[in-house]
Length: 374
Image (cartoon, rainbow, N blue to C red; front, top):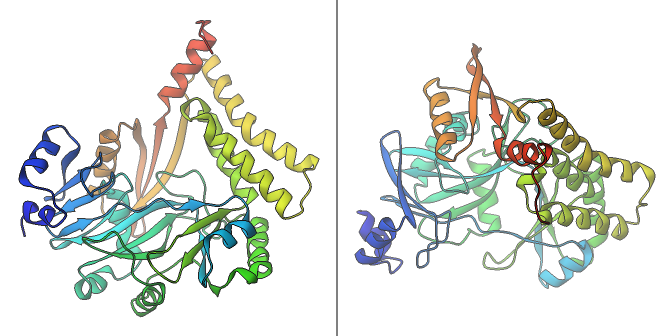
């Protein structure tokens, strides 16, 4: 089916499509000889992050509402049973078949060369998509050897792992019902996030025990999903997750909006009060360390004439995809360069450094004495 036939199903005419290409609201892209289109600005029913292919439309993954008070949030969101799953700290991908190839798409609607390369290590995707070509597997890739994240779940001690949490349908912005999704995950042996089961709002004490245990173990949080696929999904995170978020980002604080940090401070304090935990010296010290220590190190580097950098280690199956990852970084305006690559066992082990020039530039101007208004 042609692209124009595909988009006509969502009431986008040839004129609107061509106009969207001309003003760059929709941008063509290519991976391994397969052309696809990235929606970078909302066009009709297609939100930013949507991917348009001649095999169908892969809708953007919807944002999930957050509650900062666990008990009140659950009561507000659900008057019927709901499912409880773990929220894994990683990055989101949508895995789909386009023509005869299977790709992992990022939230920004790019094919991720790294994630696509590693799909073979996660599950038998050929078998799944041969029998279910119109489905999209959504999940989180997490681990200490991620090319994007500085955090990792405590139970992934090396490399990366994949955790599926949703299955959606091409040409639809809806997910399939939870029970059917669980059956597909089990039938095709697709690894998933931890599934705690089905609950009602009066089960709050048991849910509180789950979240408190996750906080102690260093996990991120929980996601609450309705029995009706069209219902509201809600997420809730631990206090420890908020501190870890601040710690891995504060070295680049000048690149983030202030709300990123204030929201996490609020979440952590709500967590302490709701779960009857003290704001003691240990928590205050951890918060101060998370906010100030990495930023202090960044300023110290710039004052000494050094660039602010982040170092990553990743693994690939195919050597050709190493180059594709750095081409992807270039497209996304990420200043990253490889410093080492070596074949160890079945994987290529690659180390690279990301230069954090925006933060460096801001701090350097302040250090050089440039005046500013605030």
